[in-house]
Amino acid sequence: MTPDSTLLKAPLLLGLIVLVPHVCSSDFVDIGRRTNYFILCVEFAVFHFNQVYPDEYAYKLLWVRRSQRKQFTFIYLMELELGQTICTKQDEDLENCPLQEGPEEKKVNCTFIVDARPWFSQFTLLNSTCVQK
Image (tube, rainbow, N blue to C red; front, side, top):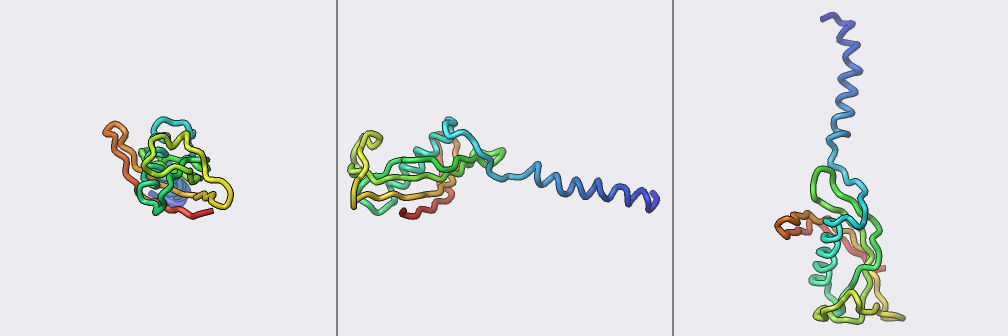
């Protein structure tokens, strides 16, 4: 191998070093908000939020701001806007429960990362961050 042939291969090697991590990246990619597994993860995240948030009233989904999935996995990232309802956490039908209005109205923006194993009906909350609006 001559020094000239090594120099010619250097750009090719550099290209592979740059390309391989990009192709094998585990970054989150946008997905449809109506994807089956994503919908299940949203329901799980809202349920979990209601279980741990120190409020007597339940919150429900108002808006999905971001819907993503980590490539080659079933790990979902979601940014959700939740609104406080007039129903307590023990009420059954939260979907049809009206939102608080006026000075009592509260909204929360949350980012959740959920690992889904839907074939086992298993969901794990990996991370959550919520801020009141």
